[in-house]
Image (cartoon, rainbow, N blue to C red):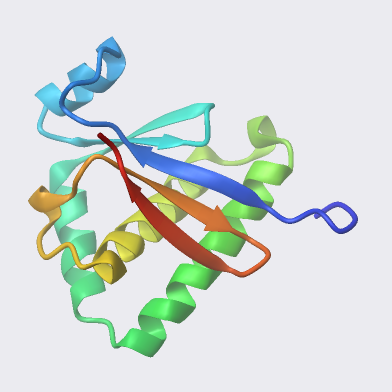
Length: 134
């Protein structure tokens, strides 16, 4: 991290009303589109989403909080460094973990109920906030 700079980034799950053809293709396959910042569009396969969700549901609150912080910090560092040099698998994996844990903490009860939203990571406070999209 550079001097006194704090990593802040967003993860966005677009809604069904999107006009982006790539997002529509992902949704059409029954998978979850996830924008990482403004530069990366990831596709989380439904089977992977369900498996990860089931793992997150079983976590106690203290572990959930620790994993959220770790994923946010790791992803922040990867995004701050040269993204092209990072392994996109690691970037997407940490983004998916952070996003799903945020959904769990936000009170989403099942993976197919994930709403169109943005998760904003505040590296200074090491916490996420969830904002619903219209």
